[in-house]
Length: 162
Image (cartoon, rainbow, N blue to C red; front, side):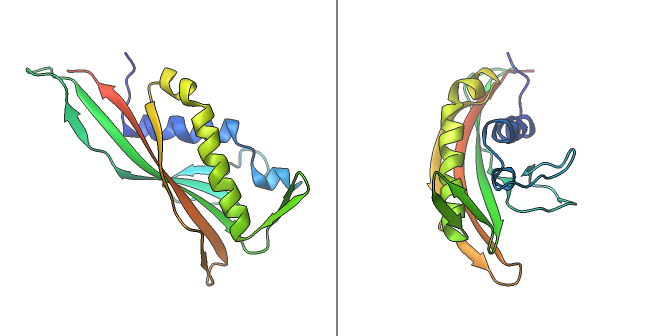
């Protein structure tokens, strides 16, 4: 049985995105530099180079599934996976140019398909029952000049009794 909790589950999902989803900055011909990532947990990011992804824990309900002193629990974890892009960032994929809101919308779709394609790998790592729950509308903040949107997902895992 895996030793898993919400922090481990978030990290597994973040790492899956880092490995299996191509960084749009790199696709556009840029380089981020050594040890600079583009997918983050909900933590302060010292070096921000957009586009980037940030995972935010929403809720983490638990349901007991056995009885007794050492009962088992099923935990569900709901996560917003935010995608941010600076105004004017362009990416051309298969002859189609994506910029601003369409770029965010494109990557929200890529997040969903990437995680869905990793269903078995996530399950093997202890994070089961991936489900896409919602996709927000794309919004724009004129002060930061960021376009952004989120994919809300749900996963579950089990915690053995003590």
